[in-house]
Every structure is written in structure tokens, then in C-alpha cells.
Image (cartoon, rainbow, N blue to C red; front, top):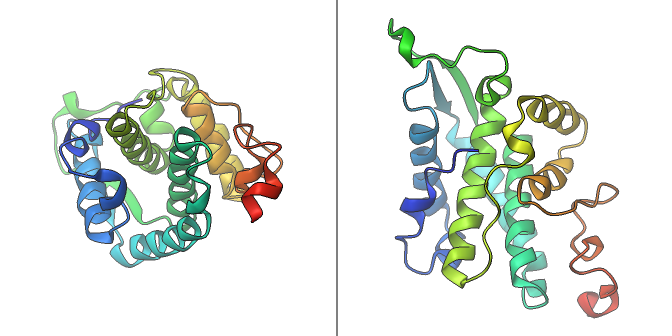
Length: 205
């Protein structure tokens, strides 16, 4: 999937800490929307209050779990980005609308185009994947693979249907996007993740 924001994010010094600031998230989030919907027939309207709510809930959960980062930094970055995706899906801070243009060349209208199947979810995932990729690159860690299930338009149908019922499953779908095996039973419980399995007692102390 498209992650055009990554190249801009890697220019931010100490991104791992800057990403915890709402002003950084707000600027980067809106920049990502411009890039994702560039040259398409869609544009996005942002509900800033809903975005602030998503960030606030994410930050609270992040602060509760950040002590786990030293156990497996690579996995925790992906988990934290998945948490952000879950809160974005739940808060729904954007609404896509048709762009005011007569240029037919701007339209990815085919029903099998992944961006058309769930444009909001695609934009949220692109943002979270861009942030995770840039932070992992900054840390010298392995980046998520390109391609994968997110290139299948039907993936977005399943993603949307499941998160409409259980927003926390967004974390599991994000694991799929990042080439990791999800924990479908409790995707929002960090010590149930494969990378941390068997360390529950340590993590709770």
C-alpha cells in the first residue's frame, strides 16, 4: 500500500518521541491525507476534535504499556502503531468526499481498487504504517515488507466489516499489513502477542 509520508517523517529528529506530540501527529496526519488522495477523485475532511480524541486515547494506552518497549522494541513499535490505528478507526476523524473536478484522469473508480473499497481506513492505515516504518528505520530495525494482504482490495472489505463490530481488531489487521502473525483472540493485549508470549509475569511487574 502507499506510504508516501515515510520520506517526510524520516526527516524529523527523534521521531519516536516527537510522534507522542499531538501537534506532530496533526501535521503529519493532514500531510498524509494530501499525499494519499493526491491525483484521485477523492479528498478528505478532517474532524479535528475527533482526531484529538483518538490521539488522547492512544496516548493514555501508550503510556500504560510503554514499559514493554525494552522487551521487544520492533514489536512494540508495530503494536503502538496498531493501537493508533484502532483509535483512528473508532473515532473516525475523516470523511472522504468527491473532489470538485471534471478531470476523469483523477479517478480510481474501479471497484477492485483498494483505495476505493474503504478510503478512510486506507488513509488511517497508510498513516500508521508510515509512522511505524519511519520509526523502525530510525532505530535501525527491520521495516515492514512491501506488498502483502493490503494490496488485495478484498482485504479492505474484511477489515472494515470486522472493525465495525470490534475496533480492537484493527491491531490484528495492522499486524497482517506488517507481515506479522496477529493474535485474534486479544489483539489489544500486548503480552498476548507472539513476540512477548511467555513473559506475562515479567511484563506485569
